[in-house]
Image (tube, rainbow, N blue to C red; front, side, top):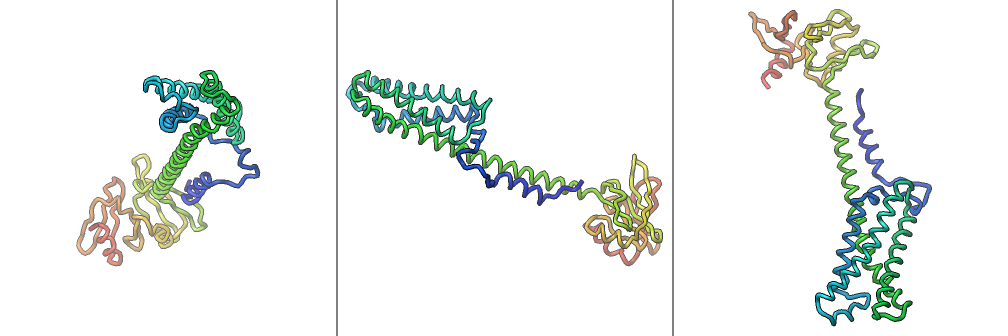
Length: 305
């Protein structure tokens, strides 16, 4: 069956292009690649690394008061804050992973989930701040914690999601290219089949180029000789050699005589006998094919290539 390459490629690109949906953005399901264990692990670990550097450099959560202690104690306190926040994020993501196995998650739910993570982390940091005596006003401590936690968490999350989206798009584009290459190969494979039709345009025979031998004219009929089970076979079709030559113009099956066409890839020997030339196919039971002066130059040109 012949495959339309153009149609295959259009369908493939259609799957990548954003489609117009009646539902709004927030009701759409989030991509599956955001719910894999790999993506969840990368988001949590990248957020932890970013949080550590952010706290060391900018000293949020009133950790500037801790800078008065030794460097070792300061680093230990920062690590404690990071581990506390990332433990909450890790637990949250594990719950999200299991929840996604049974229920779909849309963008609104995902955003709400991240917001809950921010609030839980901010509450935890506020409690730590008040218990250590660094910040006594709970409302002020929570406000600062929420602001700093948003900066620490959302920046690596946005970067990670953007990277995942680009990676997924590149993979889908590579898949389109692979599908296109396969379609082209199938098209080439299809071209390796040579089809024969009767005068009404109905398909009567498809044979590979490797098995087609020659075609012989017989008044208003043609005899198609081909190999089957290592034996030459003949199929008689009601059609003319002229019409057949037109249909096979882009193949290596060419006219060599007014009464013959030959698959030039099957020619083994060109033999001259007095003033005439003959093509030998080297197949037992198959006669030599004559070459007339009218088509001799084209045959010689093909054989010399």
